[in-house]
Amino acid sequence: MTTSSSPSTNRSPSLVPVTQLPIRVGLVGTGFVAKLRGQTLQEDERSRLVAVAGHTPEKTEEFAQIHRTTAMNSWQDLIARGDLDLAIICNINRDRGAIIRAALLADCHVVVEYPLCLDPAEAEDLIALATARQRLLHVEHIELLGGVHQALKQSWNELGEVAYARYSTLNPQRLVGRKWSYNRELLGFPLTAALSRLHRLTDVLGKVATVSCQSRFWEEPTESEYFRACLCSAQLRFTNGAIASVLYGKGEIFCASERKLELHGSQGTLIFDGDRGQLVRDGEITPLEVGTRRGLFAKDTQMVLDHLTQGTPLYVDPRASLYTLKVADAARLAAETGRTTVLEEESEPNI
Image 1 (tube, one colour):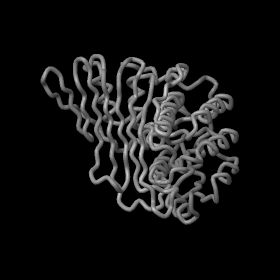
Image 2 (tube, rainbow, N blue to C red):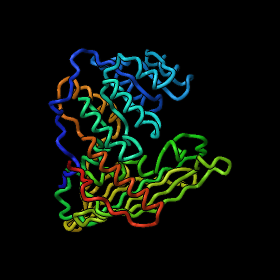
Image 3 (cartoon, rainbow, N blue to C red):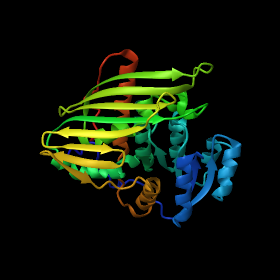
Image 4 (cartoon, rainbow, N blue to C red):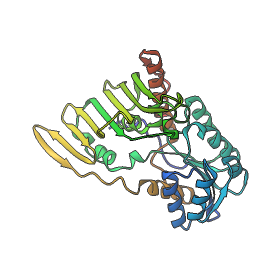
């Protein structure tokens, strides 16, 4: 199996460890993921949630009361406190680069949900800054920890040479309204926002040679910055010869959900439909055990605390996430121009 997108995950000898416990944590965001992070931080004696900053004062205050922490007026005020060891960023995609930079310059370790930011060049600068400041910059990719990906890896050698992959996820939503995740500026390009759809493939298939993509948005009639639904269809050609089709859509125009992953090889086929998996070889179908998706944000948080206090390895390197971000941005460019995008050869997962 190709492992080129997973560089060594051992903590760098230059990383400054946290020696004084509990680790003082600041949280940016009050949504679903932030709630899971906050609960885990509360339950682990190695960490203490010092403060939280959210999008609206009402939600921030409510979150702070539930998690017994301090509500801040803004993420700028949160970082400016000067008493944080770790910043966890779970807010809108557009602002992440600025928050990460401020946190690193304040000598905080940083955890951020994918995507790291919307601009690959900015993401590269942030990784370099984290290295220079001797601070952790961890980009969450819990799809790599989930049951589907683990079952995929365990059965990979049964496939032979993989020629084709197809990954389709459709998420129907009713009355999406003015959610930030349906705002072009705040969300970014859909395949950048949904980076895991591409990262699952780069993790096992490695470098991408070319990307073509088509996209469509169904705009809100009265507010052009918001959309009711979006659809992206991307075609990836990997340098090892494999071809992949990635379909991603969400919003009001879809009536049925779909989450299906197929990998077709010279010796067998893997098919994951939702949380059910099977291996097809020589006319025989073998069901696969697929673990649960529950508890993965808690697991990611605990692995970060282990890494900072004990030096245990993490499961993903930010450079691998950066590489997939470049692939997603190539898809954006292809969709905007109608032309196939060729990735630069030096943009490799294994740096």
